[in-house]
Length: 280
Image (cartoon, rainbow, N blue to C red; front, side):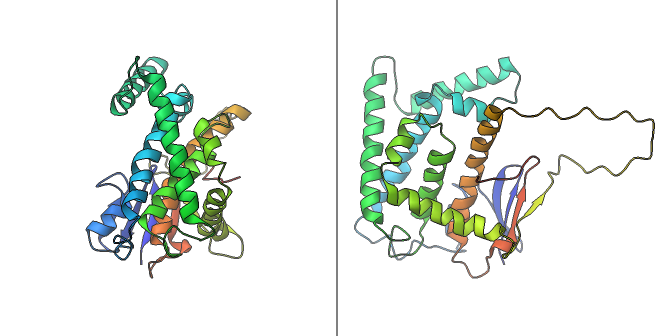
């Protein structure tokens, strides 16, 4: 039986003595394939359009999302998600270093910045159009059965829809394709929301190991703790968007595991010290 856990913001799969972490060896999906646990792609890899679709998702769309996060929105979303908890000098330096690294990887310079932006968005538009046509009204990209490309694409779509701001260029291009949006929302509902309903198995949220529980105190003289500051709407929005980066990884792994005989949504543990993962 496979156990899917999110702990310290890294999803991993545990089955007996076997453990696969999502931040190692190309992620959980690739680990499961390389280690011979499960390979959902074996019958699809000979399909004539497998390679081209894989390239569009893993190259064109991955580059577009990276660009949108770190450059296209002036990095505001990425900064809030990754560095807002750090002190200003440290967070700012790490952020600028990452922006520089992203620009280098995408081949962006001062001279070609506008041209590269147009090219990145143009490729994303082509990729969304091709994937929308391929998907049609099917449940998955290939033969109505999930593949690793569905897992990767699902993660991309959910991050783009829910973690990027409403003004995002990439998000607006994705929203042009209603069937892709329906595809992602349907899978999100089936894999997460239906499992947390009262009629289905409950997802457990366990406290972080770095935040031990405290028992009741009998010291009457102990001063009352300071009331927690109410978060502003802007802070709540950024928090919700940040959680979608984690949630998208979780959903991608869930989709890949959904056809494994030993998995059910009751084997899911969520480890989050704040509000849990919310899709509202």
